[in-house]
Length: 69
Image (cartoon, rainbow, N blue to C red; front, side):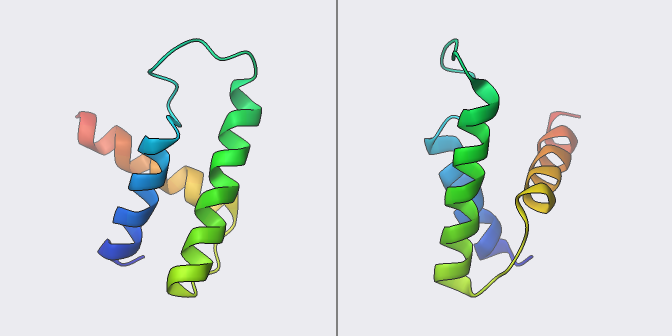
């Protein structure tokens, strides 16, 4: 994944509060699934990148974890 694609993904995930830092949510898994659907559609529309939601969420969690260290 190129850096511009990663920037697009991070922008969407932060805008939609993927990590749930801004409050208690009644259905966090549903919110995360909807957010990842937005990411998949945006990456395909803007960059012609086909990735599954699972691949992108694993990549996001891996990158966030490495940034915290």
